[in-house]
Image 1 (cartoon, rainbow, N blue to C red):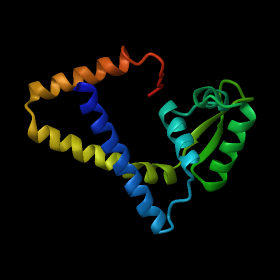
Image 2: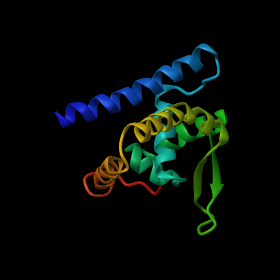
Image 3: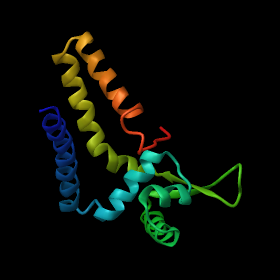
Length: 147
């Protein structure tokens, strides 16, 4: 039952994002392919990764990662910033253009959180928050975020 409920919520967030993405396609504003969208989500989640970190997280070869990153740079969704520590490395930084694209789902998540705050008590919200923290910090060790 818990798994079904969680899956339903997760699917609704994804479906909302896809609906908004397709709206942008109709308006000819979106220029990311599905694979590029996944790449951008990985880069954003990792928080300014190097090409090697992105390649490892996406489980793709370094040349393939470089190819995908070059396309994203050309489209203006990501930029390379030379590392201060190691001048041979560059970090991938998402641009404002991507933040605008990403905010399609972020605004909806914020809206749902506001609805939760008006629906549940502070104590109930504290329990939900604790469950989410434990899930993130303890129950999902395979996925590491810098954020």
